[in-house]
Amino acid sequence: MTKTDFHVDINFQDGVVWDARIRLRNDAFPPLSVQKYIFLSEVFTLKFLEKTAVPAPGVYYHYWADSADGHVGVSFVLLEKMGGRKLQWDKASKSRQTKIMEQLVDISLELERHSFEMTGSIVPSDDGEVSIGGYAQLPLFRDSLTPIGPFSSLNASLRAIMHLQLDIITDGEFAHLSLCHFLSYLWRLHTIPDLVASTESREGGPFYLKHFCETDDHIMVDDDGNITAIIDWSSSSIKSKEYAFSSPAMLWPTRSFVGGDNALSPAELEFADIYRRRGRPDMADIVLKGRRLQRFLYSLGDSWTADQWGFEALFLGLRKAFIREGDENSAAVAQESFEFWKKKLISKYSVEYPQLQRLF
Image 1 (cartoon, rainbow, N blue to C red):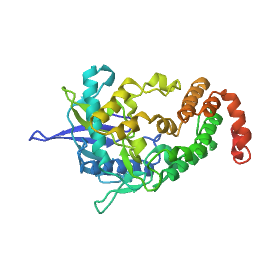
Image 2: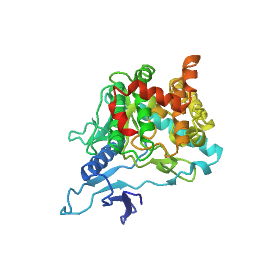
Image 3: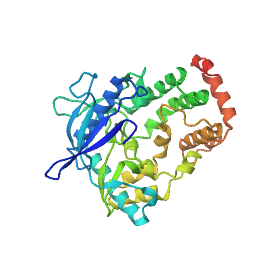
Image 4: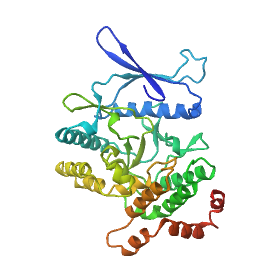
């Protein structure tokens, strides 16, 4: 059971088992139209994955109850029951972790075979073709009702995402450190040209499917460490190649990451090395250089933290990720105190962004 669904096994006499995933009703959830959009996006993402070699549950049937008078009364999806149990990454042996990463590389290489010309999320289609619509992610809904996207360029998508975050903060939807977060998104908005220039996904892609939450509880494994399924594809989206194939969050050194350190973990370095052994140094390079986009898109739609020191550490990590090797001037600027930097940015943008005054 999750916060939004509960699962029921349907056992047939011939031994086949289906997973009935039933949506819970809760007034604290987003509007029904938003829930429906995200629900159907996941269903059609799974239908797309059925055409690939990615291990994911097949979809037998889905139903969305637009009102309580529907013939069932609740929304649900009938899925293929996948074997195995949820991976516990931190408890796995070193050799088991290596085996898991080798399979994750294979899955990434399979996803690389299926590129898209737009960035957004997979949405319902009547003709059997894969259709890309706006992002099926809560932080990327304008006015809590309309998803932004799709976009044909990385530049357009990143600018729209940053502007939306600025609007969300201005509307009072950030509970903590709203001024600090506003300035962080403003800084990111103005670094987009530099960020996009360092990628291949500039105009027209290619873009690739990325799971929304790449943590161990979304990976099913058997007793021998074989991945039986990647589950819970809700809020997944089509992203730039550099972000889609950066290291999974499961491999990040969490404590040092939130402390502002951009060094990769030993697992991330091994992950890159597995790509090299597969004859894909280009994909290894994406892993090694992935922190910039990971920092840029980290924790959209909500406060990073309520703690000022924690915020400053995360933001310093973001700024350091944009320092090019040998650029002493940028390195010096990144070491400026946060208060000095904040005053400088407020002075620079207070006329162009008058909404800053509402956040003091």
